[in-house]
Amino acid sequence: LVMLAPTIGSGMASRIASAALLPVLATAYISSSVTPATFGARRAFHSLSRPTALRTASPSLLPLGQRRPIAQGAAALRSAYTTTEEGKFPSEEYRVFFKEDGKAISPWHDVPTWADKKNGIVNAIIEITKDTRPKMEVATKEETNPIKQDMKKGKLRDYPLDIFWNYGMIPKTWENPKAEHPEMKAFGDNDPVDIVEIGSKPIARGTICQIKAVGTLAMIDEGELDWKVIGVSTEDPKCKDINSVADMEKAFPGQIDEIREWFRNYKSDGKFEDGKWVGITEGQNSFGLGEECKDMAYTAEVIDETVEQYEQLMAGKVDADGLSLK
Image 1 (cartoon, rainbow, N blue to C red):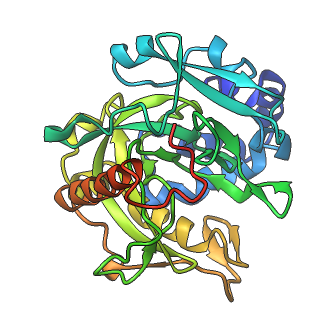
Image 2: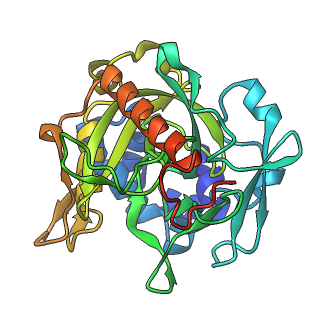
Image 3: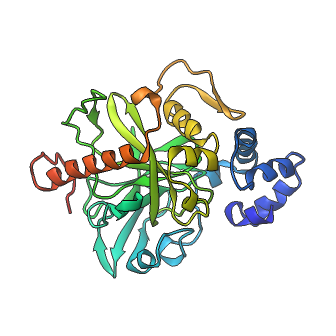
């Protein structure tokens, strides 16, 4: 439990230590990989140990610009890119701004898509740290596209439960809302492509990291195509042995299915209890391509396709419709 203190706070750690169930749950939580057998225990650990204040708080009490990222890819990225916070978190005014060598940049427009295309490695901007629930996103309609918290019906938006993986976007990609996908028969969601980092460690919000893009799910959200690329950070010790969807399933058993079910149900009227969704009657998302997690080659094609759509946007061939292109 001492290992968990930086995340939950020393006072919380002492309270957790006194709870009868938590030693067993903590053992499952800190295991090197999450298996179907430990999945429910891990979620139960979070429900017992993390009060609402911590579930919605920033992963660190230090401002982003004053702390070392939890993981950040190559040394070149660490030295080139920095972030600064403005405004109190959480609030409507809160923003995370990006700089490269001291100059303001857009994480969407000024970071390359591919870090190592031959090996399927993309650059990714982490918007949401695993095991948190504020719905953070790159602000595509604001100049320099800082990270902000999404708003819904005039209120700051939180997920109904923690997201169990690091989550972000792939720069210089865009899903065109005016282009119908020939297989999915759905139009893009007007955002950069999302990426789910499946690794074992939390990655701080605002981190620009390198992720091996291993698979992808074709999610349909309210009729819009919303690709979910799934990958693992190059700094995760398991990354070097993962070169296929089968490898990823072996290294992180059950997690692809859990990702699919989380995104299928998080907008539904159901609840997540004891490691499973219950009481769902409406509001689920769906998946195309037979719900299959497509392989690395298909994933690379999806990324390249959305890079082409992004380039058309930047060239003025598609109406920006309020998006900030600088």
